[in-house]
Image (tube, rainbow, N blue to C red; front, side, top):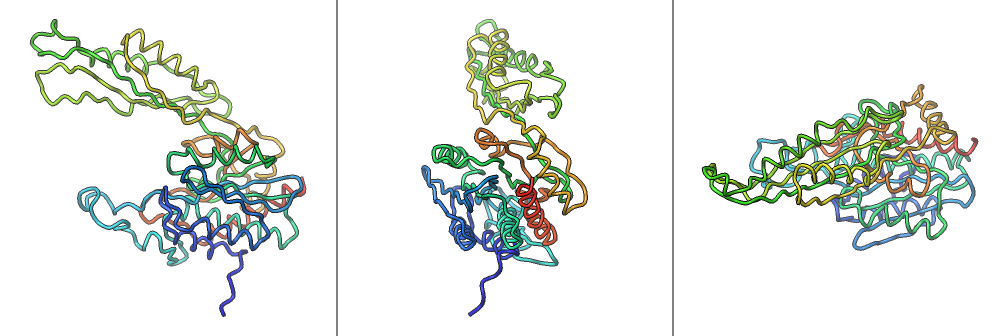
Length: 393
């Protein structure tokens, strides 16, 4: 009988996770694989299904400090190869990949597969880091994992619901580290200590359809929509704050649905998104958009969608321990940053302080997503060093 691979090495577990085709909303056994590995290290594992979303919460130990690692086992679809190889939707999934996107193949020191950097390999690295710290008697009072299968999907029944369950059951960590790929080019560059908020809006302006030769008999909604969008985009929201870049409003579509050159349309619709810093919240931005809309397009309908407000974990002992653990492996402290899109950290910040540190993200969501074995091994050592720093701080 072949001996089971040691969990000190992140590669075998990363390969097993990648070989589960857990494209949102499917799980394909990914959380079973993780639960088995955690149980073998002594974790108490709770399987938490909300709606149809599989989630997992596991804890090892009962003392303080309590350090949580958060992530997701779901992935985006593998895609169908580079653009230009045929009409969208045709061809087998994974066409154009160097290897099977769910094969977990290693070639020339590189691990290929969907989830190799976002973020199954980081989950495996954290498990390996726990195993290494456990073997060195360097674990903090307790360690937990918050893992969802709904990060790449609508994010309704995933981390946000697990956070509620944790609060209700007294499982409140002292600090949480999310394993999203935070590094642009090399491992150890960046820790994210916050994220901008995200607010989307759809604005529909109604008019009266008519012939372009008789504009006095019609009411062109496009003109009012363009004036509205000009007023919104011409306004500078802010100059940035201590930890955040300036907020940005981007128009993402303008739709009229008019195929005739001589027809004034009855409706014009626009969509926009604001990525905003801690000078604003969703409510204040919604109020501003509504006021500008009333001025330029009275009666227009606005539908808002809030993805989450901005958040910041201010530098202090926790962030210092995180940075020291990373510096111990990579030789320099990482830059503290708040850029990029949203992540599930926006839900976890409601429970405890949170930061993010994972692999190099250059190939996430791309064909041939990958990570080097050197980075995978180094990330596991960094996670072990971080746990040791929290034990001694």
